[in-house]
Length: 180
Image 1: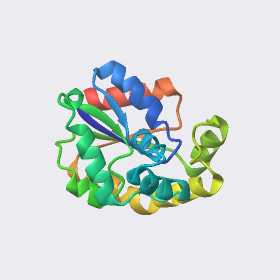
Image 2: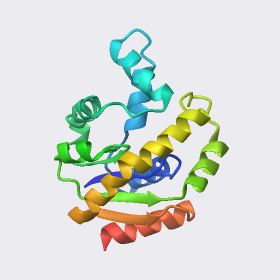
Image 3: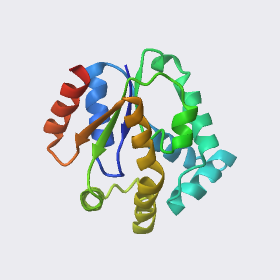
Image 4: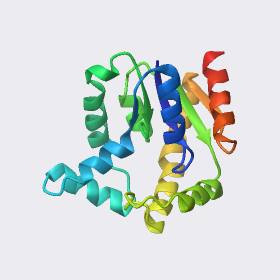
């Protein structure tokens, strides 16, 4: 099964992705983790390139994202499916990414809820979560990613879930919607 998780930063994509990974026995790939790991490569050109975008709160350009994610998905561990978090984030990425996705799960939460969750997590390893970067990502979500939601809705692949429930209730709603 091939699943994409979409939602504003702080919507619970990682939490639900990890739970789905266990339940469906397919790997979870968080593109944010890929980019954070690449950004740690102090001396590499790709590391510098990614860092420049991430720390400013901007999305990495489509061509580079598609190249990196597509490269990861050619690995053996993803041949029987995956759960993707953070890709595609733009309509161009969605149109270019032709990998027979089964479901796009949209974890819908308000901006206020997302901000409250982000403020409460304070993960020291997330140096890209400055207030300016977070606000820029929320703006980018509304401008660039919300059209992706509509793109997949029109394709009949979108599963919209109330992301402001308990973790267990969100998981139950996802299971009901993808398993009929």
